Image 1 (cartoon, chains in turn yellow, red):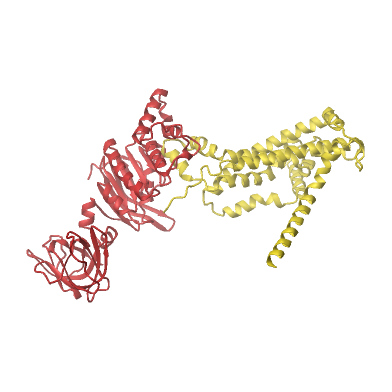
Image 2 (cartoon, chains in turn purple, brown; image 1 turned 45 degrees about the vertical axis):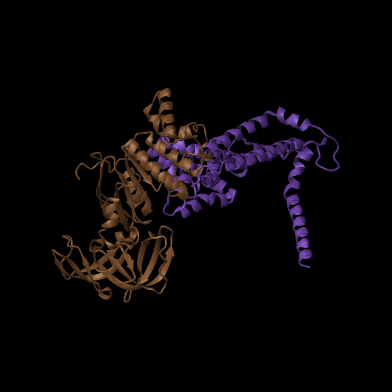
Length: 273
Length: 363
């Protein structure tokens, strides 16, 4: 009896898992599906295979401009937030910072504040400070919520790092600065690369904050939002969405893979007391 | 000792409210193999880390080769350290690990190769240069850590329980190797350990520490045969203690009233406290001889065998003495092949000569 009930439970779980995954991914799969459909209208039945939407997409100079803007903003936000995150993550994992838990919670707040609130408050701040809106202000806004991601990823890499490795470097005559470059940096490198990729994606994906702070400039998500008003543009947007989906997935997988690379390296070895 | 190579002068280290090292004074001679011995948490590692420059004293001074180094950071000190975890750089191979500390010297390539290969030969890992650090066994990592420190030709090598992570056999062979290495390179070694046998077998001198205080600094033989307090006597080897009071001190000897075990006689000693002082009389298990009949001479007390463990070359016995809480521990050499063992419950007489005892102060 017990066995049968177990088997039923297993089948129930399997069904649950299938529905769960379908719910998650089927809507997303419509994007690539319709991006290859030879019709301007998004409706079944499919009418034929085409790559003309992709051709149109690549020919569109406005898209290319928006893409270039998004890449620039993403690269800048990723670089700056990761660089700011390294010393913070090092301090929080390596030393017993007084009130370290509170600091970490405080740093993470931008993750939980609704983006629209964040966007509006940043807009007000920039207005008061009379800073004109541009791609620079978008980078500023993105750094605010990229830092928590950077710190989290970097901390997971630096946690359990054997501090005697840095002490050994000092002991062998290196300065603290060279110790960072010869020991800390190479050992934290997978975490740093992973943080760069993740923060780039977070910035690249953002619409709301960019929408508030971009002024007359356009990032890719803003371009997509703008295109939705024109039905003729829709297939092209589907093609764009499909491409972003593929690239994002690859980046996130690569980031996770790099972070897990040689995770044992530099870990404090187990030594009998 | 004013010609001390390393001088720890009234060094105190406080962490918040706790005192980790309490007024430590040490003078270590050039070329000496010096050990800091004590239970974990006694402050020996903190003292070593202050000598290396990873911690700075709250009070007092540290001198190396006549120069004060108290506030000098570790990268500017003439010391190198072998860490308990070895701290081998996991992203570098064996050659680059050993060469790590030579970068600053800007040696020509050939000279660098020669120095590192020499170090590899010294630790019997010739040809292991290209091996990744993560592919080494515990013993090999320990050797690489040693070579990496010694290749810089430091004035002082500091070792933080470097043999603690090795298994017993490897540890014993490394003890002999390390001692031979120290004699051949002639560098002053300061060695931290909680293993008394390790300290006794390797060191020229040992400082025994407890609760932040240095209790005694002496050669292994002196620590064992003439400890200066109950704590040291108890920590090094096994010791039997009897509470007593000095009855008389004269040229013929010292008489101690030890309550239930009667009057004990020690040799005349200029160190003996005056009559009336409360003392502890201490005697090592192997100084005691067992007899079936009361012998003449020396100190004799009567007891019954409570436990007997046969260990091959010797036997360990616990003998219960009337009026004593703790049984007396006796180590008897099994010199006679055919002698039968003492049975539990058998009455025996414990005898030891007057000069076998140590008289310690009782607080």
